[in-house]
Length: 321
Image 1 (tube, rainbow, N blue to C red):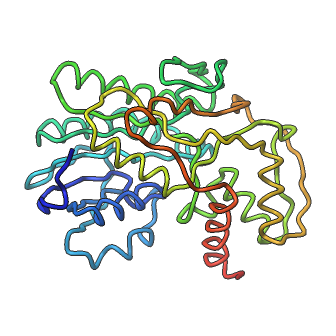
Image 2: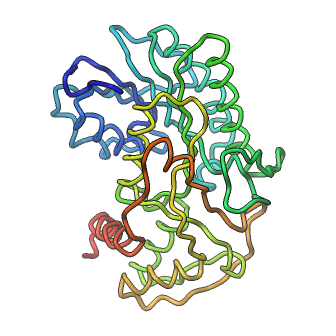
């Protein structure tokens, strides 16, 4: 366990630290007593996400693309690699950059962690399971991924990132962690993110038609950001090098999610259906047995509670509330 609160000199480097998840992680680590170096090239991250941290004497921010080597002075105790476009819209717009940050970026950050004798923490994804043929998905499932499809730039980059991480762990004896993040949501998601929750909220708050792809029966399991960050922090603290799923076991169909968001926004939007994108997973739900056993972790925020908090953030961003 990290004795962080009694050791204020411990330093964490968070790549993608100005992004949705990265900014929440920076905030939590600071609250736990870490010194935090946020690294982000601001392609999908936003400086405003960490603006409230800039007054903190233990926080610094560097604008840098981690697909290029990063050299830092002074000690580093943990490198948490969260940099990557994370929505289908983003990695369709930045396919090569997505591949690079998952491969070259992971290699570079592993090199930094090795040079500093630091723990390396990889933010992987449920997308490594592809369109799963096993449900729910345990960490032992190898996945069903199309290596040349439009989503492959993200799916395969993350699979390669996991392979890099384990290779460094086995070859150099490095302390490594791998979290497989299932669908998450909350404040600081970009309003034009392209994923279901921000799409539906943006459309509902503007009383525009809510766009559901396919027949809307495909499911996701949505975990609120605060719960996810708690699991990440717990994983950083334990000595376990295998991948760990974090998410929620509560599945919701896309048409149900659209309806709940519309109702909570008080919107008059209709729901319209469009063709399902290629390789879009039909269902996604984590087996959380490992997280419960190793981390003593489970999500606690209900979908309705989390949606209410996130809608409030979107109202504020859009100036509609």
